[in-house]
Image (cartoon, rainbow, N blue to C red):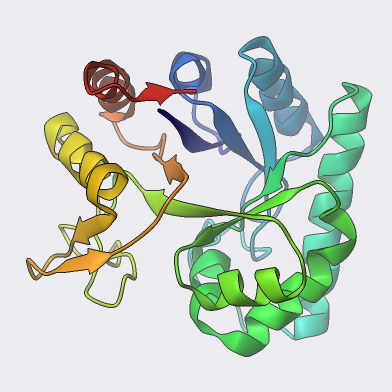
Length: 243
């Protein structure tokens, strides 16, 4: 059995070259919350060298808050920003003769379209021209999943390897201490339960149904590399390959 592990990259960290041998797809910041053509080119090159599937990681245009807050801007401003981000990214990919594999929204934008139908519809309308032979990474049973499917956009259901969930299958806010899972063994148990049982244990101890074909592990905490090494080794022992 194979499972995809994705990672948000091109966000100003210096560890991408260490993480990429242990992941199979990546989401590259394309100028909304972070990034410019130089950081995009550098990260694309690293991904190619490591044979990683390449995705765009658009965001609210908010470098100050790293795209983690919902911005008070019009839908038209948001549309223009996202399309500018994707245009830049596709242009940079073309310089390397590479094609876009997937789109994964970042931060507050990802969370907003997961639950808000109007914004989910607006997002899908915004990206529709970029989705030929391109996947959209979405949370299981989310509003954006439903809207994407109804618009014939190919999806991959995503779960977070290093984030805890609430009972309504939302990510625990980063304002809470237990938002991020940093212990490699806990991450393994969390991921394996989703793969093997199709369930996740929430912070209340309740088990909820969840499905995922790709798992995100964030590269912006100190245990990221240790977690990825441990995860790949232990999953292999259970007959699951990251690939």
